Image (cartoon, rainbow, N blue to C red; front, side, top):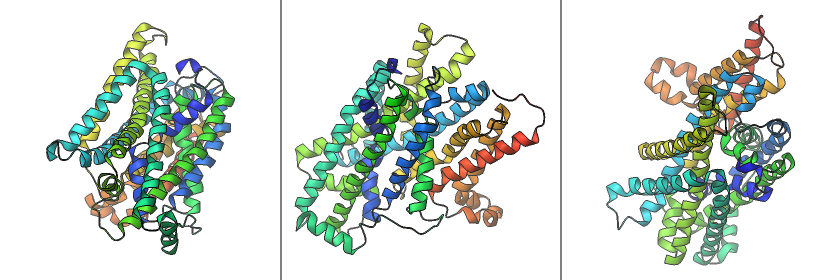
Length: 465
């Protein structure tokens, strides 16, 4: 927790950087190139979710000497609930971050394609990125993560602004012409008031789905909670968390406008995947010096999230798994050694996971958010169950989380399951079209409902304090 001595403004930009990887830099422009500015509805929900976390969960984190988010569940339920939720977090975060690391290799592969044999392009980029990030995370811990993220955030924001300027110079008539054409084509539409579970970008999916996603990612995910716990006080943590929402909104607007500019520039040109549009512009249109800045921005964005993930996974492994089993103290030298080894092991594991990922036609940002949303509902539901249900005990929390994740397996993976087991096609068909922003809300509702029902079905229990 860096002695809880990080200033709130540094924590704010660390939060922004941690949720900004190559996915934001590469994939968000691809969303606007394909559609419009509707993704901002999700980002508006992020602000709502942050405000709720700031006043509902953060005070509870700062009541005790907590190191991980899941220690709060041990206080309310017991050690088994803490270990179970921590393991769920570790698995989900590892898979999602592996996808992010893979995304970074896309532009790097395009840029160094003339130097490295094609078969080794992606593996080489992934391995170099993973090795460099592990080194400074292993050496410097949370302080290194926060302060390097501050620099990295500045680099990739500068890269995005540079792209905006260059796009204005590349299109006849500049940005006034781009905006005029984009408005006529509906590319600047940001609000869709229709209510549909199949459309990812609507006001309701944004405020409800995006709000729940932010509550889970910023209130039940160690990646963000560890930064908040490094703040000097509760007030500083709240200021950093809420402020980061508005900075993220501005940032996503910037990268979506890059996508609008790319649409105006390339017109009807066909790309094999939307994630290749911005990298292609970088290679074809940017001067060598600026390409260097953009490459640095892409690497910085991914390394910031990657470093934070390694540190979060190491912290969860050490404090939620190792210490309870070893009976050692947090200040024992052996604990520090184990934490460093855990960071090293997770760094290698995440790199290996990125090497195994295969490119799909779906924007990588949607893949990563879908993976995270898969279990976020269960994690958030466990916290809400502990806060709002006085009757629920440890067994109910574990039952609720298990039921929530199991049910979401059929919601998220309905099509692959139906393809593998045709007999399930009919019962699973209602879930085929559910858009990813609703995953967390559905998972949270199922988890809380199952936990409350479990607490009613078991008459004999010891109630939590």
